[in-house]
Picture (cartoon, rainbow, N blue to C red):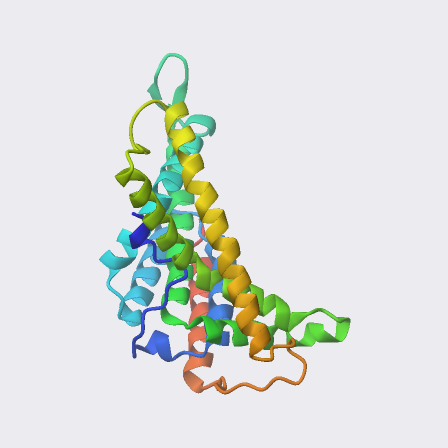
Length: 265
């Protein structure tokens, strides 16, 4: 499961989603997050699913590949659904379990929240899969550029976010290697009582933290020997260019928001 983790990875491609400016993609995701909350019935949530699947299709990335990489969040989706099922007391009684009752409103609300969470995760995953970490860093820095007037370290913030995204798959791979090494030495992390499995995680965390700090030190040394002194006066080899397709991508969200507003219950 860890080796299938796709969040933070970049998949090279030449699709229309890959060619869209990184700034437009960031704005697209942020606006999409706000627009998702406009849905409040089956039609609007169905429209969100269709829209998300269309973006996946345009990205040229197989939907099955994305689903296989999102398996770690399945538990969170199920937990969110069950939370609403058992604690939302709206509508008619659907099932009477004796000690508690399940209402139609709880089931519907659970499905809606699960769909909302799913489309948000898929859309943000498409962003990282179709955009290089360097482009994301430049886009964040350019979008936050006006905040430099208030002495906000925009370049440093963008760099930290980019490094965090870059090292997520690296740490996942490192975790997988350490787990296999511990299992080869007789450690069992997948069976037995919960207390025993919790104890088995400790030998995993210690070398993982040591490896993470070692990588951070190596990265800091590499940046220092290459003359990195912050963002002041730095230039960029790769320039971002806003084009017509980037504007059209954002206009598509405006159309989606208008349709959702008209179809709201």
